[in-house]
Image (cartoon, rainbow over all chains, first blue to last red; front, side, top):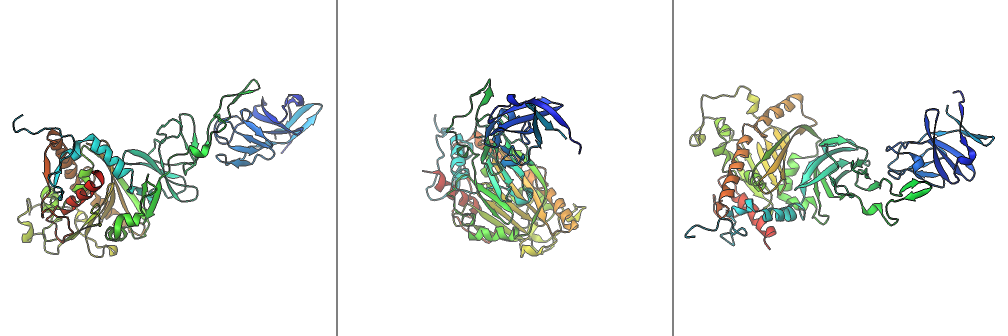
Length: 104
Length: 421
């Protein structure tokens, strides 16, 4: 699959040890920063109708605000019920202070 | 006042301390008695029927039903075990499940989306940690809120032979002890380990007290008299070999009969109502008998398991009948007709055709719904009076004949033990 690197945000805008939502190129994304490293997943929870950017980041785990399901932001794996389905993750690169995401 | 008695007694007055043969009408009409029955007979110390395992074969399959008046859900969990949980959200008390049957991965109350596992554990509370707004977190549940303290009410569950019972009372005795060896024997005869196949349901609301349905199936006096259909076609005969048995506490019973071999026109039916010679059933499968190996003799066994269920074998028609009380003067009656996995298609058809005798419009059972309604009318207008259940005497005993109301006296003997302080 061809790369589709897309500029989604300024690096400085991504909050440390927290999450923010970005809507771009028809995508609803959640951007996280942990130990200076940026991670990106789909923003919608795979369980209920909720955005992970409204949830709570604890280490590498994002907790959905609706039903406390958790995902590992590094690989999207579901970590506890009620979520059972992984959330999609995206490759990230930083260039000139911008965050690029490969939307595939 | 003269000789006219007080019409509305404060509490049921029994004429005799020893015998329960004279049943005060107010046990059918009094709301406080009824509430106490729910408390003592349905919610404490007893097992109640909830369904058949065949109704929920796959993980996540569920059926909504009731115990007494409390809505519950029978559901097969992710681990394959049968759970029964109360259909009341732990948050604000809503009856969240409205479908009668279905399949779910989890239960979600639509009001605030509290989210439960199939075993009733609370797993998610929306905005439990609050909502982020302008860099601050607002609201949310208190820090000390513990999801494990806010699950659905979980019932104790027992399954045997594919039948599911549940109890709100976790200290209830084991199901086998509850049924007792005599009734267990007949229970295991019907539910002998073969997988059951659901054939269909009948549902009806009968405007009468729930106990009247138990009594109806503990009363072998009426079938040959009320059910002219039975008599007309020789299905209920005075020379049927028969037996009435109870558990030790006399709350459960079985009426066992074996259809006589004498021709339908022999003398024994002559004295009993309308034996109409000229009338003939076109589809003989309604009436004739195809003996099945598991019967071990009897052509009919009617089991009353107190307080909630009747297990029926009438020739080739087998069903459960679930009594679901709704106020002192009404109950829902839910019939589940079933067969067995090894039935031939012909046998399945036969069971279905014979099921026409039963249910709200059944050739036979339609009569029962109506007499229960009319009995309730009688009780309501004359609550100070009492019924006379003295056929066969005053005692409570097993018999080898049908000309007795012993089983009804037995049930009320037990009822008084549990209900009176």
